[in-house]
Image (cartoon, rainbow, N blue to C red; front, side):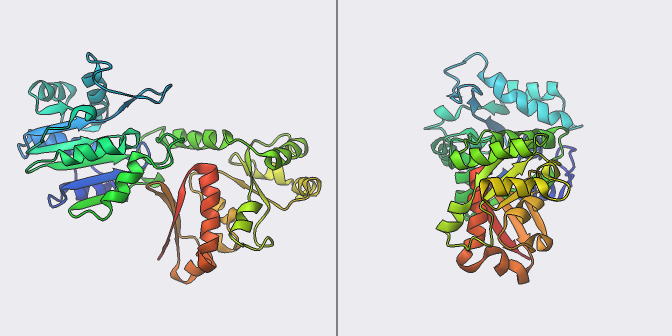
Length: 372
């Protein structure tokens, strides 16, 4: 199983390759973190399809977003460099393929077998006998993405990639990737593939994502209660790297969860720093709780998320029963045994909603619970 000489290295990538090779899928959408091979396999498929004559053209479109201003730019803003900036990332990812060179890609572009299209100016066009790649859809207006979808003609396939968690604008509640994933999940002849943390294969991507998460958490604006807890923690545990403090008592009260099953606040530290807040025998956290008058849980942030979920969940033993935790679209997907599903979600879903509210506040992520 390979595309253009590139073999999948994870189960998620295998599912993506299978979806791409299944011609009955008119739309294949892949969502997940950077470094999981979304663009690589979709671009490899598109190039291979035109090289082998299965389709006439491989059409590539992706938004160009200014990192500083967060504004999307069109070909009208930079007419001389737009095509280059779109196709260069495709060439970069295809460097992993042993069966195509940069010069061959450039030749396909010159022959217009690979075409760069600006989503701002697709209205009125029709793409027949083509593979269309809609890349980095999280940075695209949903209306523009829908317009590309409407341009599909006869014998055409649409490939979509996006990261609705780490690469999306944190100020946008529901980005293009999230909305497209929702729309396509029930669409006939469409296959949605979620890639997670374990599908990351690019060197450095895992570390980069971890840093992004830390920055996101550190940038939270604290309220007065949270600031007071942080100030006390810094006095009692000056050697601890605390990322943030979250006052969770109001969340529990809104969900009518008894206060003796959840803490009043959560201290989130850098990985490996929980012990510095707690103290050798728990003396530090005891002093912090005594001075603030609150019950507090200390947890740390890692990419496996198991400890984090276990620490904040109202059921103290639930962490021992978690089978798996990973990213799935814009959510954190938790898999638990069938027998423990009720304990995890709680009566009327209160426990799951509590965990989700914490995730939204800290990480801008939702929660998805599955039973196995």
